[in-house]
Structures are given as structure tokens and as C-alpha cells.
Image (cartoon, rainbow over all chains, first blue to last red; front, side, top):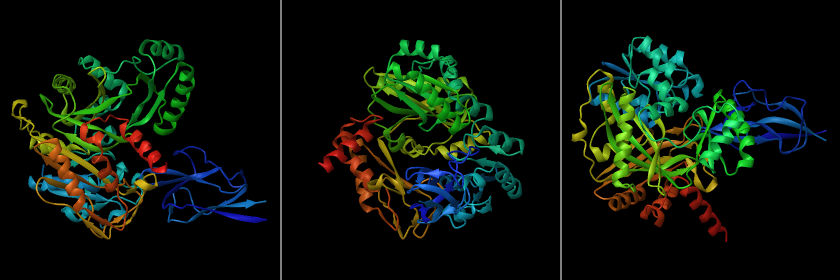
Length: 81
Length: 453
């Protein structure tokens, strides 16, 4: 089974849910398509969505909710068929 | 007032430190771990770390900031703008801790901060408001009835919204009910409160705001600012002085703002925001901001008054140092915001290290900045690095002076919005005053289309 690393092109703060206290966009084991939102990156008060970029199953998150990202950091891994 | 803690960062923290120092007040900066080497920390007499980089853990952490007030022995707190400046609970906690809050009372922040109650206060003070629902929408039938009365397009607004957030435009009746449901869901997600109201949408309006100042007994105004040049409802260029508003309606707006401030026994600096409806030559109250604003320097430049120093004096219990008759505007002032964003890449934020930050100078040019060459612009906070403010005897001279100043600016290491702002200032529409609140985005779209063709 191939794996796809989901990277954030932007630095910033990674969030797994759309707003504090809300359910996460996704949990490990959930199916995804290329266009599925994995999380949000906040940079200078702007929010950008991070998309899965490949279809398959969300295998794992590489960083915690609220983690600080450098440009290009991997946030999650997708198992592709 | 002996020792002032500034519960903010960046250019406004620097601005407040300067005003306090001129009044011989000791200053205490607060900072996050990411801001240890920031300018506001270097300039203050003392500094206290209030937590990790993320603002919610530091600048917005009430208990940590209260601990800093106590440990530093500060007897007053200036909140700046943004962060906790309109947080009534924090204002009350500061007072309960025995310190002076540099701003209006917590109750005034609550009353004016909630848009529904602010509209009620405005109506009670006989200040025109945009026609709309009487308050929070309670049922769909009411929305349909109000819409029939005020017509389309209309705006659905979140009671707890602000700064342009939580607004949805509806063009036709068939979209109304669905749009209200969506707006309520968005408001609940964004603000934790799903109260919404509706009002007439004015397609061609100027954003005109009136600077007011009160000491709890009387209030005065310091004229108007035009902040119509906006992108995504964020102000890009701000002006004071010779504005494109008829004198008669301008006077009525200023009088209305003072009436509202006196009606709520307002204490400190505040801004009453209006929409100026060019087609009807009329105005409507939008909201009141119970703090100093980003664009306050243009008012300072045309009136020759230091608004932050006045905030400190009034908070210390002194009466206003000026009367209405002594406040006479002179000439024209323009402010532009220098943001760390790349306009050519859809305003992508541009954090990094400022390898060079050479600022313009010369006559009637003012720089309010929170950074210097070598500063690290972190991804955690607002993208605004600095403001450039110029004054001229006429609007045309002020525009020429701003263009001259922008020509001297030299920023390296990060991308700023300076070239974008310069293009706006050189546009015929800006020169002639043919702009309104949605002009900039249309102008940008037209240019993108022309460039692509």
C-alpha cells in the first residue's frame, strides 16, 4: 500500500477542528478524497485549509492539534490504494 | 497614574509607551515567548512574559495578564486595540484588581460592543440607524416582514460580529430563509452566539467614522475619518481632513456621535462608525468601537492633539483638556497600513526576518512602527508591521507626500503591501474621490482581468 504525505506549504499553527471545542474535521482511519480538508493552518490571523491531496484512508496525524508548523512540514499521512 | 502596563504588542504598544513616557509614567510591556526581542519590550521600562507564542496562551490569557499587573505593581492598564481592548470581563477584572482601566467602563464596552444593544442606544439618542429588524431575529416570518419593508439587497449580521466579520448579503427573497440559517450557524461557530439581525444593504456607501472623546460628563468630537478603501472589509487607506462628504451631513454625523457618547456617559476615546449613503446623501449608525483605533493618527495630524495621552489623562481622572470650540481641523492627513503580505499572491502572509527596514522621513511624515531592521516577523500575530501617516495642507499635497514617502521606503527580507498601496494611491478613482466601501475589490478584479487579457 502506498502512502501520501500531506504537507503544509505555509508556516503557522495547525488546527484539526474548524473552531475551538468543535469535532475534528477527520479522525485516523477516516476515508478521504484529494479534496477532503484535513485541518486548518493559521498564519497572521488568516486561515487556510489543508487538503488531503490524494484519496485513500487517513493513516495518522504527524502533528498535534495546535502544533506550530514550519513551511513544508508534514501534518498527516494518507494510505492510498 | 505612576506605572502603566500595556496589554498589547507591535506598533500600538510602542505608540502607548511613547505617550506614557512623555507624561512621565513608567511603562511595563507584556510579551509572549515569541516576542522576547520585540521593539515594544526593548522600549518599555520593564517587561513581563505572559506565556507561549500563541496569543490565546499569552496576550489573550486573562489570568496571566492579571498576574503580570500584580507582579509589576502597575496601577493602570492600556489595552491598545484588538486583543482584549473590548473585552468587558478583562476591563472589569483590571478594575477589581485595583488598577485603572484606560478605556470606558466595562458596562459601556458591553452596551456598545453588542450590536443589538448599540442600535438600541443609538435610537434612544436619536441617531439614525440603517433600517432593519428591531433586534435579534426570532422567527422567519419576522424576517420576511422586515425584508418586505426595507427591500433587497439586505445584510444579515451576527450580533457578536465585528471588524467586518459575520456579515452575509442577500440579493433576493428566495434566498432569505436559507441565508439566515447559514448565517446563524456561522455566527455560532465563529462567536459562540447565533443571534443575528437584518438591515438594508447600501450598495454604494462610504465608511465614515467620527472620533469622539468623553470624560464621563461631557463629550466632544474630533471630526471624521474616511476609511472606505477596504479589502475584505479590512481598511487599507484612511484619511482625515478634506473628505468627500457634504458639510451639512458631516456636521450631522459629528453631532449625532457626540449625542450618543453623552447619552451613555462615555469616558475615553471612542469611534462611532457610520455608513454615508452617497446616493441618498444620508448616513446611518453602524457601530461604536470602545477603544483607540488603528487609524487614530490621521485625526491627531489634522487636530494637533495626542489622543493616547488624552486617554491616559482622562483615565487618571482629569477632565477633557479640550472643548469643542478649540478643536479646529487643519489640512489633510492620510494613513496607509504596511502589512507583511504578498498582494501578488492573494495577500499570502509573509513572515520572516526583516533584513532591511529603512523608513521614509522628511517633513510631515510620521511612522508608527513596532519593528526594526533585524526583527523577526512571526506567523502568530497580525500582519501589520507599521503605519505611514502624512499630512498636507490639501488632499492633493498629502497624496503626493505619501507617494514620495513610499518611494523612500526600503523593506527587504519579507514582502509588504507597499507596492499595492502605491498603485491604489496613483489610481484616478482615488485621486478624484470616486471610491466607496466595495470600490477596491472591484478595482482589483478589473485590473486582474485587464492584465490577463
